[in-house]
Image 1 (spheres, rainbow, N blue to C red):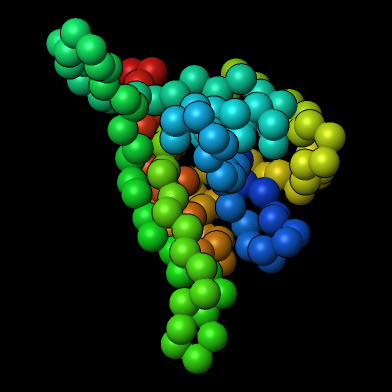
Image 2 (tube, rainbow, N blue to C red):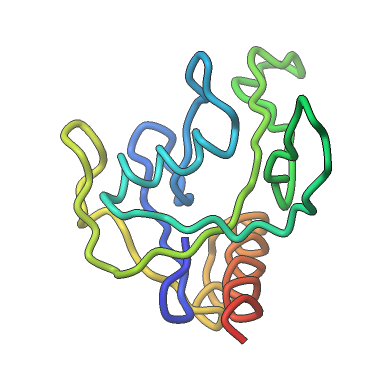
Length: 145
């Protein structure tokens, strides 16, 4: 999520890491729809997807927004054995304000922080979070140019 040259990240209490909004895809939901829903739930903001997907002429189909990245993360690794995996579809989007108002049951607004490109580069956040944050800011800047 990008607003005025910064991206929003939150301290995920359960995972103990700082990450952007996200979550699982619900039944009968497409990945990009899940991404937008998670932003609405976790931040209380209406996101605008930065979508570079080309339109395709298909009488019985439609082109879906493509994620900027697809990542495979190993979760619960013990003695070299992977107990669980996450496939992350990384989308970039802008939001109209920085007034975060999470839905009931979500992390509090105080758990969120806005990071500029310089702050991301000088942080101790994980390298992928830094890279995706910087790319999202650049994509938003390119979209508005």
